[in-house]
Image (cartoon, rainbow, N blue to C red; front, side, top):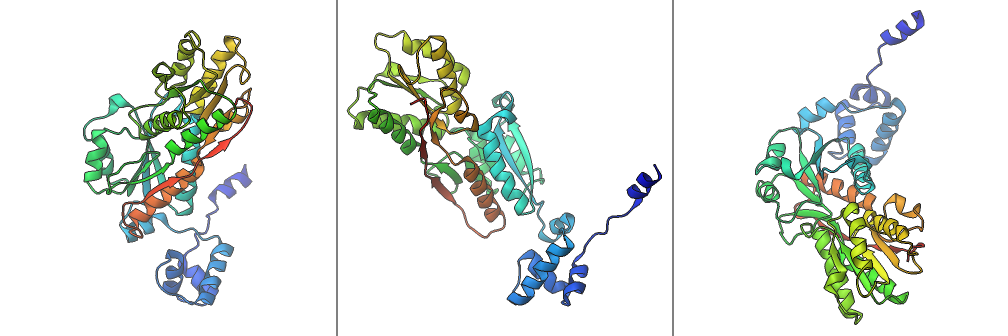
Amino acid sequence: MENFKNGCNDKIKKITLNDIADQTGVSAMTVSRVVSGKGIVAESTRMKILNAVEQLDYRPNLIARILSSQRTMTIGVIIPKAKQVFLDNYIAQILSGVMTVVKQQDYRLMIYPVEEHEKSSNLYLDIARSKLLDGLLMLKPKINDPNLHSLIDSDFPVVLINHRTSDQRVSFIDTKNSDGAKIAMNYLFEKGCRNIAFISGSKEESNGIDRLRGYETAMKDLGLSLNPNWIIDANFDAGQAYRVVDNLLDGQIVPDAIFCADDYMAIAVMERLSEREIAVPDDIAVIGFNNIDIARYVRPALTTIKQPLLMIGKLAAESLIALIEHSCKPPIQKFLDLQLIVRESA
């Protein structure tokens, strides 16, 4: 017990800029320029200081940074709240990318899960005006969300994730969703599928709309009949996707492929097809969208369109910090390419 008490009472020495200055033989002001990245310092001196920073395990004083920069060094991310939201691999991968950059840049992260019924006309503005944050990331906002429009009008630094807009005031990181849907459709066509159904995502989100448009465009370009009964809205909900499979199977003509707007819906579809004793892909091929981690482990393993989810999160965080620190002017608008991942289901 005595050793334990002594250990608890030992003070951990806080390494300061002066300690680094003493070790390197330069002024504390020069050390500060290197650590903050502001000001010109000779390369040989800079490297000497950085080596000392690593050797002494120097950690910047967060409170001092906040006071000197007049920023909170904290960014927020608004995510759509759902059951077991943090078990959602799509959200988890994007947040992982965000947190990687936040940690590297010595910022902090606050997460705001928001439900539809919680929204008031000033919800996002209230968060922005709390003075707890320097900027906001927003994952998959609704197209006609009035909260979003009022937030954009306020000029508070914001970057949208997996959402695109033509508004030149708005920064966003998105993928080429329509092209991704066309890639999936062309692949199914090459595999001999001609009766291709589509289980769509939310029509209130730009990526849901873009994937639907990509499907419809591909069907026309491939010379295939566009059957409105084979376009079923499941709102990115696996439970809904599971339930609507019977509608497709009980029609006069049964599809030979089902393209789903996300992987969770595709996995639910395969479960229902298995219960109906329909073989995937021999009877009906199934393809998803996103490439969540579990897609490779279900059986049959899911063929899908890969979104670079980690990269989306990283770019969103980097873009927001650039806006906060005024190293870049809005809008920052980036579309990332998508990739077909071929597995067993198609």
